Amino acid sequence: MNTEYIGIIVTYGITLLLAVPLGKYIAKVFAGEKTWTDFMNPLEHFIFRLSGIDANKEMNWKEQMKAMLTISTVCLIYAFFALLFQDKLPLNPDHNPAQSPDLAFNTAISFLVNCNIQDYSGETGATYFTQLFVLMFLHFISAASAIAAMMVVYKGLKEKSVTTLGNFWSYFVKSITRFLLPGAVLIAIILAFNGTPTSYAGKDTIITMQGDTTQVSRGPAAAMIAIKHLGTNGGGWFGANSAHPFECPNYLTYMLLMIAQCVIPIALIFALGFYLKKKRFAYVIFGVMTIGMFMFLIPTLQAELHGNPEITKMGISGVNTAMEGKEVRFGIPATAYWSTVTTIISTGSANGAHDSYMPMTTGMQLMAMMVNCFYGGCGAGFLNYYIFIIIAVFISGLMVGRTPEFMGHKVEAREMKIASIAALLHPFLILSFTALSCFVLVNFPSIQWAFQPKNWLGNPGYHGFSEMLYQYTSVAANNGSAMGGLTANNIFWNVTTGIVLLFSRFIPIIGPVAIAGLMAQKKYIPESPGTLRTDTGTFGVMTLAVIIIIAALAFFPALVMGPFAEFFSMK
Image 1 (cartoon, rainbow, N blue to C red):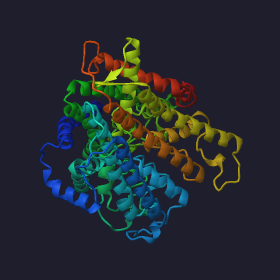
Image 2: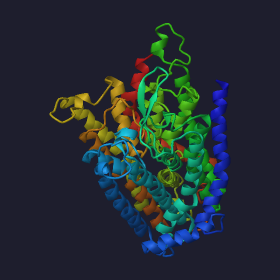
Image 3: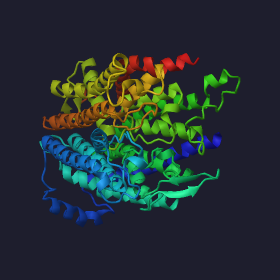
Image 4: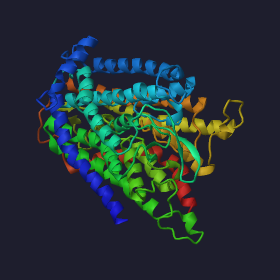
């Protein structure tokens, strides 16, 4: 057991050691300073010339968001029709069928918005063509879009009084060419040399140790698995996701994938400090986010290691008995650490069955996605946290009787309204659609649909409610993990979650960018003795309190009806 603890401590330690220099490098890239990847300049210039884009043209925040929505719309249409007709496209050695319109709608949106929830099984629901040239392609697009939006906010925080905030296309392309693509290539090579398939051949027929003949899926999986973690995307080449031995062959690849999904979100926080030349401010943010992570990790470890009370009632020692759904090769702590990281960072990949975790762990996973700002996904994590900073600054300013200011700009009613809408949209989408699904299930269980609501859930009671709550929480947080007890591949769930995916991705991005753009246009106010300092532990505690209060007030009743009720029912 001590060895298993040491494994996750070392993994997190290596992540931090890599994140600091990576953050410094990212800051240099976007500040236009010289870096060792400047050899990519000709490729970037070729892309801009081919696309007819002037990468040197300054854009205001509205033009930045128009660019993001334009490329997102084009990619959505492309992905939808590719999935709809994938059976007629090349690279389909296993002859997988096309996706239905509702499933293609859900899948295209899901991968576009960095959620990557899969209402299909990876090896049978998609072809090699759509896995590589649609889904993996969107892994890069979605991560780079959020990083570019984040850089618009960083630029707004840096400048004193401007109307333009850099160029979205420059941020977007450099995100891919300077660290997403090189990092993904390196990770894919390591995965391939450790046994992850890279072949374009179809299923292989093997004889198991039991003497059974079975077919094993393979394919060029290493490339997609690399960027799915580095870009905090999620989704699996195989249905079992990272619990599949081809996706994560050994403990080295376990550490690699854990580091990959953490390193850029953490590095972007340090990059903020280097970019603004306010390292103390970045350390405060990192500290709050790290405290938040441990608030979820510690209860998760305790719940999983102390076993299942139902098994204890049978006269069996409860320690280490909660092994159902765990990664038995690496142990309970490794599985618990993965479950925490994948939900706070919105990667959504899994090396265990989320439906089999203890109720307290389910509660921690849900709260991690409900808060949705401790590290978070590439770019989107800070954008979500930025909303809480604005709210904390506004409340702090009112408490001391001074007009709220942040980074030399006043926070006024317009910015506060936008921040409030962005903060409240998340619980509104999750709770309203969960209520809708409960209403349909209770009142119309046998309605004559192709898939009746009474067949949605594999588990009744508290756990069944948690499964529905988890589904909408996961898509609203752009996470993509799921509890397997819910059968979601039907029109109701594909369409409703698709709607939530669209609103929960773009409004929380547009909101922070709009706030940054509006504030950057205001007259710069130099710091004075009365200015609220945001690089102190006191402000960090204030921000953490705002996050907890907003999440607790909005979600606590739903959590009580689901995982917490199940937890107490097992006592």
